[in-house]
Length: 206
Image 1 (cartoon, rainbow, N blue to C red):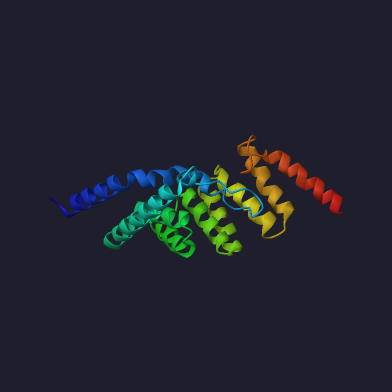
Image 2: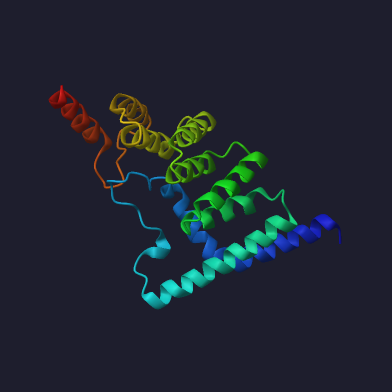
């Protein structure tokens, strides 16, 4: 059996063992990027919903085991882009911000055309109080996929809350509305209504 076949077999075994844990993280990745605004309710990950204390403890143990397995995988196979990405997701959901940033950056060094990873990286930068880098990451996601919605939504949130720039936030969100006229904020409020509210507040302030 070739070395490549051994690697594929090893990766298949790792992913088969962890699929039950990681599937939840993958499933939440699309929405994970919405976890930004300090004054808006945050979306809980699927694993966090309805967990009893015992289940939460079990989840923590499973997550730690998954992290250890993926850390071992990227050490053995540092060119495994998907493993770096999943490791980033695990760090993300474990609030290991700086480690998530490193994992996502490594994933993007190997494969730079993943808008979801760029967006998750932006969220981690913002959580690490690096808002300018967050905007850069969201812009990169948009350049990779011009129809990528979470990056545009998050860019507007950071521009509004971190840079106090409602005009730029509105511009980012209006671009999103051209892609999805039904876009909503994480709290369920229609984005077009949020824009109108901000415009009214701006008028009142002048």
